[in-house]
Image (tube, rainbow over all chains, first blue to last red; front, side):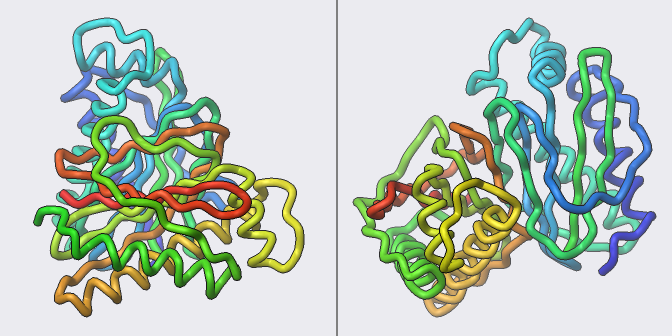
Length: 154
Length: 154
């Protein structure tokens, strides 16, 4: 399965919808693009593997300031460090965005399953998807900083 | 599905087998244990999501010295930095260990699918599996340093 334009919207809409619903944040999507080569870099990432009609992966990579602001709104309490509660919340957001995206893809006739998500923390880490297929990158901005959603399918 | 003792061996044997076959390294497994709480930390990690009889995730986390030594043997040429070729090789090792483990689990009557792997790089990053289920951790040592295989199922 090639990365089709029709696949961009489910992930883009899900990300906006889930962050609005769960964290009262309305991120502004930039122009999606197909990236090649190096991975996305950030301070906290949520990753979830996808199987079904095609194998793939979904990754959301945040700057430290951006995710602390998002989780502070989600918890209704200021978060000053990337602790276990923040990491678990990033995992929950990743899981819900993955599930909501897959539900939207299902409506387009595509069936996918989600694996158990992982949350990566570490200043300036890089996430590289190991696939010969294209990687779809959607940049988002918030008042507290930027994050990126990357989706790839084999 | 609970994390059964019978699941330890396929992952342990695969890891030893794949590193021996692909990189001419024979890692020495330590005592596997069920971990809770924080994730494993290292400098390079390969992660792949799993679906099928249960959702899960497989993660292999290496120290910098350990992975540079392993990939140097795999390439037959000394590797001095974590560059794109090294990251791709970590992805390939992860993919093959995931595939070989799943083949061994299949022989035990369990059916699993693997997603597209991701490779994380960044000094001292942490990988946290977001699951309420147990996380199986298998420590390995090599002459060049240590690495850890973590497997979780929901």
